[in-house]
Image (cartoon, rainbow, N blue to C red; front, side):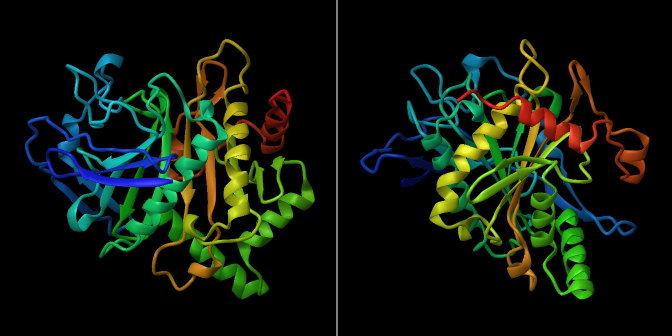
Amino acid sequence: MKKTTTRLADGRELIYYDARDDAVRDATDPRPLDPVATASEIRHDRLLGDRVAVASHRQGRTYHPPADECPLCPSREGRRSEIPADDYDVAVFENRFPSLAGDGGRCEVVCFTPDHDASFADLTDEQAALVLDAWTDRTAELSQLPGVEQVFCFENRGAEIGVTLGHPHGQIYAYPFVTPRTERMLASLAAHRETTGRNLFDDVVADELADGRRIVLDGAHWVAFVPYAAHWPYEVHLYPKRRVPDLSALDDAARTEFPQLYLEVLRRFDRIFGNGQPPTPYIAAWHQAPVRSPQRADFALHLELFTIRRTSGKLKFLAGSESGMNVFINDVPPEAAAERLREVASES
């Protein structure tokens, strides 16, 4: 992998990740851009203990532009985008409309491919491996920034999820705090250690492997399963079998196998609801250990993938119980979801 760092016209950082070591990235950004002005503020909810990012400047972000005006496609004559080069493998840049900014964190955009009409599932193993390299490099670098407590790599796909740009891409948030979801995991981790003397993540993976009914794919170095208490209609968790705290700690064997297993899971997601259905909307979220947590060594890196579609043409809405009390009601038994994901395996 070759990494080339440059700057956009307004000073934001842009990084190219190329599979070829001889790739040359010398395109400059000729756009007359004003400096980025953000109004991001972190507020604390005293009742719940949560933090809320208030970012009014995001009201002006680009919203469903036509394909020939996509800001994530390579630039061409007469149309300049966020990527000055006329082609790229993987590109990462600071978001022009960040939810977090300055001392309040950092937000980056990850462009998986220059192909506007593709999706992550369309990538080759080699292309997906390069995205994994980019996620890993950004995790390592962002973790070193002053004030960053947790790095979150994720992808939202589909208009139903709220995606405003159709080009295949994801984002990375560098939070100046440990997120509420991770804090709950850490509390459960500590309680389990106190009660049993064992690691909770290790026990969860071991229990799923022993049960077997919710296993979707079982590789040499990764396992993918529908969790016992899945919140979403179709939800898959991917764990490396050797517990590590974050992407930077993955060994070569796990890094090599991941693209094969993950791409297969994504392709199955697109076949869940049968032929002729639009692509399945989903969120793919990497859970990594907080940067400075004393429980860092006990945390287990994992990826959670889920869709809000519950059946053909119908979505799972977060109604009263979910939105009002955070108590999820799942219409699809996890065992049935796992069986369906095994049924739609790719033909060899």
